[in-house]
Image (cartoon, rainbow, N blue to C red; front, side, top):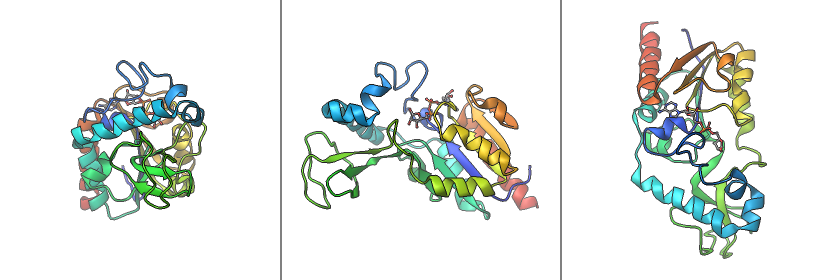
Length: 237
Ligand code: APR
Protein backbone atom coordinates (compact mmCIF):
# COMPACT_ATOMS: atom_id res chain seq x y z
CA UNK A 1 0.00 0.00 0.00
CA UNK A 2 1.59 3.26 -1.14
CA UNK A 3 0.44 6.40 0.65
CA UNK A 4 1.49 10.04 0.78
CA UNK A 5 -1.55 11.90 2.04
CA UNK A 6 -3.46 10.23 4.85
CA UNK A 7 -6.84 11.03 6.39
CA UNK A 8 -7.98 9.04 9.43
CA UNK A 9 -11.50 9.15 10.84
CA UNK A 10 -12.10 7.87 14.36
CA UNK A 11 -15.30 7.11 16.25
CA UNK A 12 -16.26 5.90 19.68
CA UNK A 13 -14.69 2.47 19.08
CA UNK A 14 -11.17 3.93 19.29
CA UNK A 15 -11.83 5.00 22.89
CA UNK A 16 -13.74 1.85 23.92
CA UNK A 17 -10.61 0.08 25.18
CA UNK A 18 -9.92 3.12 27.38
CA UNK A 19 -13.24 2.51 29.11
CA UNK A 20 -15.24 5.25 27.38
CA UNK A 21 -18.61 3.74 26.40
CA UNK A 22 -19.55 3.71 22.71
CA UNK A 23 -22.93 5.13 21.73
CA UNK A 24 -24.67 2.16 20.21
CA UNK A 25 -24.84 -1.51 21.08
CA UNK A 26 -25.06 -3.27 24.43
CA UNK A 27 -23.93 -1.04 27.32
CA UNK A 28 -23.76 1.85 24.86
CA UNK A 29 -24.13 5.40 26.05
CA UNK A 30 -27.52 5.68 24.43
CA UNK A 31 -28.78 2.72 26.47
CA UNK A 32 -31.13 4.31 28.96
CA UNK A 33 -31.11 7.63 27.08
CA UNK A 34 -33.07 8.54 24.04
CA UNK A 35 -30.78 10.54 21.76
CA UNK A 36 -33.45 13.19 21.45
CA UNK A 37 -33.51 13.61 25.26
CA UNK A 38 -29.85 14.55 25.61
CA UNK A 39 -28.23 15.27 22.26
CA UNK A 40 -30.41 17.81 20.49
CA UNK A 41 -30.79 21.59 20.82
CA UNK A 42 -34.49 20.99 21.52
CA UNK A 43 -33.63 18.80 24.52
CA UNK A 44 -31.31 21.50 25.86
CA UNK A 45 -34.02 24.15 25.48
CA UNK A 46 -36.63 21.97 27.20
CA UNK A 47 -34.53 20.35 29.96
CA UNK A 48 -31.18 22.12 30.30
CA UNK A 49 -30.50 20.55 33.71
CA UNK A 50 -30.77 17.00 32.38
CA UNK A 51 -28.54 17.75 29.39
CA UNK A 52 -25.91 19.60 31.46
CA UNK A 53 -25.83 16.72 33.97
CA UNK A 54 -25.35 14.17 31.16
CA UNK A 55 -22.35 16.04 29.72
CA UNK A 56 -20.97 17.05 33.13
CA UNK A 57 -20.81 13.36 34.05
CA UNK A 58 -19.04 12.50 30.80
CA UNK A 59 -16.56 15.38 31.29
CA UNK A 60 -15.83 14.26 34.86
CA UNK A 61 -15.21 10.68 33.64
CA UNK A 62 -12.34 11.88 31.45
CA UNK A 63 -10.16 12.18 34.55
CA UNK A 64 -10.54 8.43 35.09
CA UNK A 65 -9.55 7.24 31.60
CA UNK A 66 -6.32 7.30 29.62
CA UNK A 67 -5.31 6.94 25.98
CA UNK A 68 -4.91 3.35 24.74
CA UNK A 69 -2.56 1.75 22.22
CA UNK A 70 -4.69 2.96 19.27
CA UNK A 71 -4.50 6.62 20.38
CA UNK A 72 -0.76 6.24 20.98
CA UNK A 73 -0.18 4.72 17.54
CA UNK A 74 -2.12 7.48 15.79
CA UNK A 75 -0.10 10.11 17.67
CA UNK A 76 3.08 8.33 16.56
CA UNK A 77 1.89 8.38 12.96
CA UNK A 78 1.17 12.12 13.23
CA UNK A 79 4.68 12.73 14.66
CA UNK A 80 6.58 10.55 12.21
CA UNK A 81 4.61 10.82 8.97
CA UNK A 82 6.42 13.28 6.68
CA UNK A 83 3.53 13.69 4.24
CA UNK A 84 0.10 15.26 4.59
CA UNK A 85 -1.82 13.90 7.54
CA UNK A 86 -5.14 14.70 9.16
CA UNK A 87 -6.89 12.94 12.03
CA UNK A 88 -10.60 13.71 12.14
CA UNK A 89 -12.42 12.50 15.22
CA UNK A 90 -16.11 12.28 15.98
CA UNK A 91 -15.16 11.78 19.62
CA UNK A 92 -15.65 14.53 22.17
CA UNK A 93 -13.15 13.08 24.65
CA UNK A 94 -9.59 14.43 24.78
CA UNK A 95 -7.74 11.12 24.43
CA UNK A 96 -6.21 11.85 21.02
CA UNK A 97 -4.61 15.08 22.22
CA UNK A 98 -3.52 13.49 25.49
CA UNK A 99 -1.76 10.82 23.43
CA UNK A 100 0.03 13.60 21.53
CA UNK A 101 -1.93 14.02 18.28
CA UNK A 102 -1.56 17.51 16.82
CA UNK A 103 -2.94 17.41 13.26
CA UNK A 104 -6.39 16.76 14.73
CA UNK A 105 -9.90 18.12 14.17
CA UNK A 106 -12.85 17.46 16.49
CA UNK A 107 -15.82 17.52 14.12
CA UNK A 108 -18.44 16.93 16.86
CA UNK A 109 -17.00 19.36 19.42
CA UNK A 110 -15.23 18.72 22.72
CA UNK A 111 -16.34 17.96 26.27
CA UNK A 112 -13.58 20.22 27.56
CA UNK A 113 -14.93 23.28 25.79
CA UNK A 114 -17.90 25.47 26.76
CA UNK A 115 -19.78 27.73 24.37
CA UNK A 116 -21.35 30.93 25.66
CA UNK A 117 -24.70 31.62 24.04
CA UNK A 118 -24.52 35.25 25.23
CA UNK A 119 -21.26 36.29 23.52
CA UNK A 120 -20.42 33.30 21.31
CA UNK A 121 -17.00 32.68 22.91
CA UNK A 122 -15.72 29.15 23.29
CA UNK A 123 -13.65 28.63 26.43
CA UNK A 124 -11.60 25.70 27.72
CA UNK A 125 -13.71 24.03 30.42
CA UNK A 126 -12.88 21.44 33.06
CA UNK A 127 -15.63 21.47 35.70
CA UNK A 128 -19.42 21.19 35.59
CA UNK A 129 -21.67 23.52 33.62
CA UNK A 130 -24.70 22.75 35.80
CA UNK A 131 -25.37 25.59 38.20
CA UNK A 132 -24.93 28.24 35.52
CA UNK A 133 -21.30 29.40 35.90
CA UNK A 134 -20.21 32.75 34.44
CA UNK A 135 -18.65 32.93 30.98
CA UNK A 136 -14.90 33.69 31.33
CA UNK A 137 -15.13 35.98 28.27
CA UNK A 138 -18.22 38.13 28.95
CA UNK A 139 -19.26 37.31 32.54
CA UNK A 140 -22.83 36.34 31.62
CA UNK A 141 -24.17 33.70 34.03
CA UNK A 142 -26.08 30.57 33.05
CA UNK A 143 -25.57 30.95 29.29
CA UNK A 144 -22.87 28.34 28.71
CA UNK A 145 -23.69 25.12 26.88
CA UNK A 146 -21.52 22.10 26.12
CA UNK A 147 -19.51 22.77 22.94
CA UNK A 148 -20.87 19.59 21.42
CA UNK A 149 -22.42 19.24 17.96
CA UNK A 150 -25.88 17.87 18.61
CA UNK A 151 -28.19 16.12 16.16
CA UNK A 152 -29.59 18.74 13.80
CA UNK A 153 -26.47 20.94 14.11
CA UNK A 154 -23.69 21.33 11.58
CA UNK A 155 -20.40 19.59 12.39
CA UNK A 156 -17.24 21.68 12.70
CA UNK A 157 -14.37 22.00 10.19
CA UNK A 158 -16.27 20.48 7.25
CA UNK A 159 -14.46 22.60 4.65
CA UNK A 160 -11.01 21.61 5.89
CA UNK A 161 -12.06 17.96 6.15
CA UNK A 162 -13.51 17.95 2.66
CA UNK A 163 -10.32 19.45 1.23
CA UNK A 164 -8.17 16.84 2.94
CA UNK A 165 -10.43 13.99 1.78
CA UNK A 166 -10.47 15.25 -1.79
CA UNK A 167 -6.66 15.21 -1.83
CA UNK A 168 -5.91 12.04 0.15
CA UNK A 169 -4.64 8.74 -1.19
CA UNK A 170 -5.27 6.70 1.97
CA UNK A 171 -8.42 6.93 4.08
CA UNK A 172 -8.84 4.86 7.24
CA UNK A 173 -12.01 4.78 9.35
CA UNK A 174 -11.55 3.35 12.84
CA UNK A 175 -14.19 2.35 15.37
CA UNK A 176 -17.21 4.03 13.87
CA UNK A 177 -20.58 2.46 13.09
CA UNK A 178 -21.04 4.39 9.84
CA UNK A 179 -24.54 5.44 10.83
CA UNK A 180 -24.10 9.17 11.39
CA UNK A 181 -23.66 11.57 8.48
CA UNK A 182 -21.73 13.43 7.22
CA UNK A 183 -18.88 11.32 8.68
CA UNK A 184 -20.40 8.11 7.30
CA UNK A 185 -20.09 9.58 3.80
CA UNK A 186 -16.38 10.48 4.03
CA UNK A 187 -15.45 7.13 2.49
CA UNK A 188 -17.34 8.12 -0.67
CA UNK A 189 -15.43 11.41 -0.99
CA UNK A 190 -12.13 9.61 -0.42
CA UNK A 191 -12.99 6.90 -2.97
CA UNK A 192 -13.95 9.55 -5.48
CA UNK A 193 -10.52 11.12 -4.94
CA UNK A 194 -8.96 7.74 -5.78
CA UNK A 195 -7.89 6.94 -2.22
CA UNK A 196 -7.43 3.43 -0.92
CA UNK A 197 -9.95 2.98 1.89
CA UNK A 198 -9.53 0.75 4.95
CA UNK A 199 -12.03 0.13 7.72
CA UNK A 200 -10.87 -1.01 11.16
CA UNK A 201 -13.75 -2.05 13.38
CA UNK A 202 -14.78 -4.72 15.84
CA UNK A 203 -17.38 -5.85 13.31
CA UNK A 204 -18.10 -4.73 9.74
CA UNK A 205 -19.88 -1.37 9.98
CA UNK A 206 -22.91 -0.24 8.00
CA UNK A 207 -20.52 1.29 5.44
CA UNK A 208 -18.16 -1.70 5.30
CA UNK A 209 -18.91 -2.56 1.67
CA UNK A 210 -17.69 0.87 0.54
CA UNK A 211 -14.14 0.21 1.77
CA UNK A 212 -11.48 -1.59 -0.27
CA UNK A 213 -10.37 -3.50 2.79
CA UNK A 214 -11.80 -4.38 6.16
CA UNK A 215 -9.75 -5.28 9.18
CA UNK A 216 -11.94 -6.77 11.87
CA UNK A 217 -10.81 -6.70 15.49
CA UNK A 218 -9.94 -4.36 18.34
CA UNK A 219 -8.45 -0.98 17.45
CA UNK A 220 -5.88 -1.38 20.25
CA UNK A 221 -4.24 -4.20 18.27
CA UNK A 222 -5.03 -3.35 14.63
CA UNK A 223 -4.14 0.36 14.68
CA UNK A 224 -0.57 -0.11 15.99
CA UNK A 225 -0.10 -2.83 13.33
CA UNK A 226 -1.29 -0.50 10.56
CA UNK A 227 0.88 2.38 11.78
CA UNK A 228 3.96 0.17 12.01
CA UNK A 229 3.37 -1.10 8.46
CA UNK A 230 2.87 2.41 7.06
CA UNK A 231 6.00 3.80 8.70
CA UNK A 232 8.13 0.78 7.75
CA UNK A 233 6.99 0.97 4.12
CA UNK A 234 7.76 4.66 4.10
CA UNK A 235 11.23 4.15 5.57
CA UNK A 236 11.99 1.47 2.99
CA UNK A 237 10.84 3.60 0.04
N1 APR B 1 -12.09 -1.51 18.36
C1 APR B 1 -12.65 -1.19 17.16
N2 APR B 1 -13.95 -0.91 17.01
C2 APR B 1 -14.73 -0.96 18.10
C3 APR B 1 -14.23 -1.30 19.39
C4 APR B 1 -12.83 -1.59 19.49
N3 APR B 1 -12.25 -1.91 20.64
N4 APR B 1 -15.25 -1.26 20.26
C5 APR B 1 -16.35 -0.94 19.57
N5 APR B 1 -16.06 -0.76 18.26
C6 APR B 1 -16.94 -0.35 17.17
C7 APR B 1 -18.37 -0.86 17.30
O1 APR B 1 -18.48 -2.15 16.74
C8 APR B 1 -19.15 0.20 16.52
O2 APR B 1 -19.24 -0.15 15.14
O3 APR B 1 -17.02 1.04 17.20
C9 APR B 1 -18.26 1.45 16.64
C10 APR B 1 -18.85 2.54 17.53
O4 APR B 1 -20.04 2.99 16.95
P1 APR B 1 -20.96 4.11 17.64
O5 APR B 1 -21.18 3.78 19.08
O6 APR B 1 -22.15 4.30 16.78
O7 APR B 1 -20.01 5.42 17.64
P2 APR B 1 -19.69 6.45 16.46
O8 APR B 1 -19.67 5.77 15.14
O9 APR B 1 -18.49 7.20 16.89
O10 APR B 1 -20.95 7.41 16.53
C11 APR B 1 -20.98 8.50 15.66
O11 APR B 1 -22.97 9.35 16.66
O12 APR B 1 -24.18 9.63 18.53
C12 APR B 1 -23.37 10.26 17.65
O13 APR B 1 -22.17 12.26 17.86
C13 APR B 1 -22.16 10.91 18.26
O14 APR B 1 -19.92 11.05 17.37
C14 APR B 1 -21.01 10.18 17.59
C15 APR B 1 -21.63 9.69 16.30
